[in-house]
Image (cartoon, rainbow over all chains, first blue to last red; front, side, top):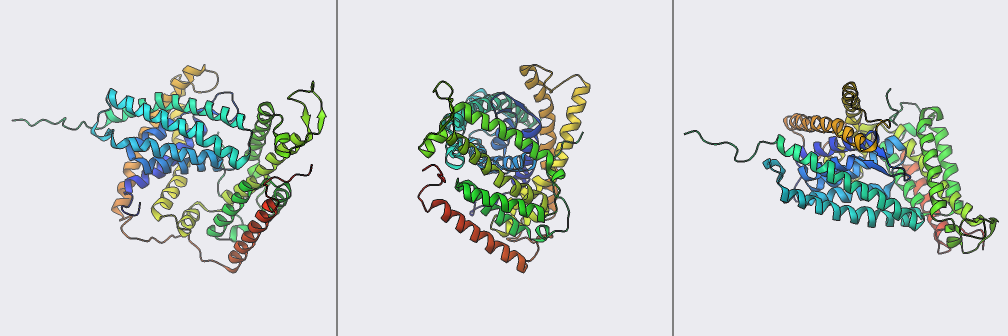
Length: 185
Length: 277
């Protein structure tokens, strides 16, 4: 980040994005039955922001948004999962170079690319990193945290696949398409 | 029907008088100790200290009771889950087995070690929760952003955090307005609906919220651009306060606690305190 400063728009996107992430995570999460895991709509939103504003914004929205949500509504941040939200946001953001959403198109090929990336990234995050950190930091039983990770991760993949894709295509439609203007002769 | 959330509570107390930087550093030290240790003696000590600080802060229990209730419920479920998934975790950690209640000699027999392990898990949360709650309710949000900048986070990112804190109540209000107007149209997101329908209905609330937030980003960044935000390398903060003697004393005290706790925890080569051997 030393070489180039964040643009003002990215900074504001991080701020507002974190706020929206926290609100969605608190009010628009639908419980699944497994303790502490939800059908969490905020990850669909995180994927949208990561693709639109890039990896740094995605990572920081995940990190700040999740930490604030935990702190304000639940009293204490659950660091192992906060970190993973950041990582997931950052890695999904890397795909933003390949998907030029501002150009107003979100083609089938891009939808497939986006979903393949998000599934791989979330598998690493929720199936690998989050439970490992839980075991390291909180010394919780291995099988419990891995089942939690599997359920939460699986649900987040579905959320991002459904809601993330939907949001991205809506967003793409709201942009003016590049090359949509023709010259009247 | 405002949903309760933790926010800054204005009071006159020694804890409030500490600068945001001090509180942030102390909170980070506190969380690190609580994360690293599993030593019952250290955890008990930390828990007692945090209760003490809570009393000094003059924050009333009633003001944060809703969060405490929620956490207690969460801890209960979590403890049950630990027992269901791994009823012999304590035996594995402490290496001995004192069976209290024999359930068919099987996996689910209640052992003293398991009870002790789960007691420690719970205690671990109880050491962090008062500190985290206190940090949130005694630190002014604007000062918090200034403190982040002071400890080395770039001011752009600190400002993003300030924006997030500033806009959470606004976005919460937007969310409620949209959700109410959708409900007036018969779109329900509560648990009365079946799961797939509920998810679909959730989307019809989330999409307007997100689109209006994207508009907000546009407006705010234009306003900041016009005021020349980000032009200079540094930025001053209205809420930043200079260090007092008490701040330095507090930080030294917390560093000492950190060192002693880590020493007590790790001098026997294990983060667990084992009363059974």
